[in-house]
Length: 250
Image (spheres, rainbow, N blue to C red):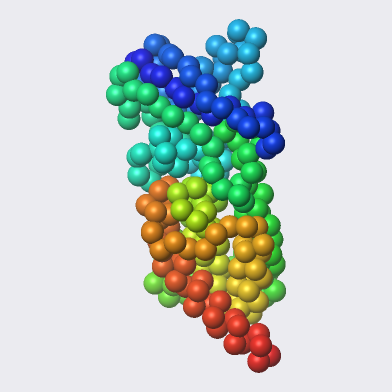
């Protein structure tokens, strides 16, 4: 395959940045997108040039590290797919591909395609802990949990924190991520003691990180590689309203 890459290059958060173009005529359709970038970087290094910086880890679609914009879409055009799971057979021979980092105030650029997503870590940290003593491993049926609740909590827990929801939102909102992290804790029996304080603290932390408010476009759930439902945002909003009343009256 022949492809033309327009890649965003930026030396650091204070650098203006620019696009650079690379043409490859030896791309295999069986390569993953990141493997293709590895080949490009090998060639750049052999020429004594700076390789393209991008973040990655597991390359199995479970760590959320590899995200960036591909032709204007987080992780690329294929639904329910992370960048590391996107293969070059998804593109036509002769395709022109534009690659740039996630654009959000809460995700400052570190270098090239890598952004600082530590804001997500701080939101999670604000949630604190579960005070109930869970003890050692017990029989699976020792804590009765309805299947509907268990399914909802598990679906929310599949969020990998990649940031695609933020990058796709016109307001750079982090509500799908925060809602998912709250739902998978707040719905379970073990998460009830801190439910409303946790919600208050995590929403406050989210706002402090300069993420925007929900735009109601719904683009976040469309690009989410795990298909997290907008229901988690509705659940977070309900819990946040209840938290205002409960914490004020306590």
